[in-house]
Length: 463
Image (cartoon, rainbow, N blue to C red; front, side):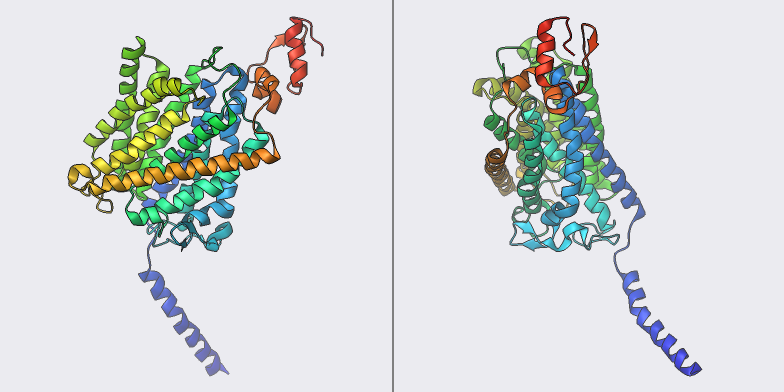
């Protein structure tokens, strides 16, 4: 009996040997890389509250809470969608170059071990979390175009459908192993097409479908609190280092390059926008400088890990001026109401950045990338152009269809009365800056009609 137990223990020990050897030979987790990506993910997460402040300061005071609510609630919605289905659709095993399989539904099989295809030195779950932050901020960018007029119930449904049918497929096309744009050679280091062009174009389509805000072009719709917007811009600039440098997926030299190109482009674009505005309007504005910085951050995103710091200087210089033209000239000539210029900054800036990557990319910076036009490979510019066109087509068509489908089941747009009172009260029953009327304070639960009556009585509260 004793011999039998000895033999059994020996057999178990032998069976354990291959597993031990496999673990020793397999990919090892780099704690430095892992720490860097976790911190980068947190920085990218901070960008969405920063965006809430950036957008919130630019709307009228009666809509600041509803605008902020858009970004904040997306942080919850997008997180759940990503865990349940978004990640596997975006990065799951390829299905014909167009979508990921459902192998990782609900994060099944996404654990603490590295993944050779996506995360060779960090836990796969950390890669998932980093990518989740991109999935959060992208639909939030769209809300700048639909601010002050979209009903909240329709907004919730639209965001979930947009993530599932626009963001997830596009992320797979560009970043997923086997994605057809990736196989074609399209370069997008941190989201020029996946994040910025998709959200900017979708925002423009949504603005056109919803129509102009009540009183647009006839009454003042100036930002109610520019310091809030500048604070948001600062948080975006800060978080963008995680956005771009973190996309190197390691604490390495490439992350350092992306950090420097990101800051350089943002800095020169802030100056570019400011000086162009100064020449055009006669005065430089703080809002313009903040907007220019964001435009520069957008423009460098697709090429942050593919171009030199000197090239990023030119990309930001053109990006700031180009986005100013889109916001201050093009929008006025075409007459669309892109409330907070999501298309003008993110759509136009993303297109320029994607094409500029095809011009300035060099394998001396990133051997895993490609040389661009200036380095003897004119074909790369054509590939980038294809990526831009494909992204525009998907975002425009799918967004239009989604909005029309949602509109069948619930109204997309607030009524004229709801817009007049403001979406803070009409949609959410609360105010950012409560007023005192007569002898009574307006409680947060008052109805739209009650507020209208109170305003009309000029001092006599009906409550």
